[in-house]
Length: 387
Ligand SMILES: [Zn+2]
Image (tube, rainbow, N blue to C red):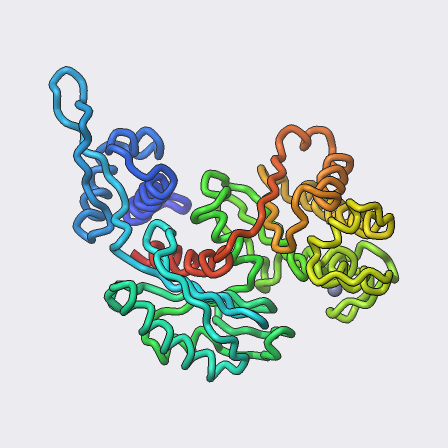
């Protein structure tokens, strides 16, 4: 086979992925609609859908409408949501939510795990909770096809190892292997910023977008990038460390050992520390917006400065990667306040005019279960890719 040409197997795989992605987006489609949307020939669509029907991944739904004058009823196809289930767990310092999602990425069960920081305790906790959840939700264990775990810290996703997590006090913990061995279910681990981006691609705003950047606004700031429909990890799995871009030369000390990183002026933790030092301590970052709204000029300055710094870093990212869309996920509860306005303005004022109309900026609050649900979608992607 000449170099660059795809084998029949690769063609089949690419057509199958296109079918699954289209059904995830649209819910129900007929074979001819699938062919139209994906650009895959009707013959190949028939072959792929037959194979997926045999595997139990698809279900046929007779439609009431008919196809043309011959009056043949149209048969629609949809993913069989109960064919496979995935577990998603967000391992954090103060909370460990766990969910089970179906093949369509919908949450069917939720559980809050007791926070246990030692890896050994985590394995036992997950083992016990999974047993209870499956019993309560009446899901056969054999239908669980994978577990996705998200950890705040430096994660080697290829090896499934948490290299370092300041929150958990972990160093070189082979989390995926430990849990997979105990539960005999495949496990994937990734950091929170990558996990959110995968969630955006699987069930969020990134479904229809090939090139997008996802920005996580939390205690610290993270980012991840989809390019040509794939998560870009960089050569050593470290792409996306937007929080450690230097924005204030010689500024405040950052936990990474350097000074003036974006995290030190715009992370939720840094903002709360700054508010405390300025004499108006707040428990949650959203209270800072309220304080500013009531006329506190220092609170206004902190939020404006934070938003401007985030906007400048994102403007640089737009120039570097030319994404179609920037998807912000707000875990801090800034709302439509000073921070968001300053961020948006700084992006718009600092990107070249040709990017202005072609780069969508979307802010979304982080809904409940976003992290564990996104973690489950890591496992779903791996399962679907393995078919
Ligand atoms: Zn830093």
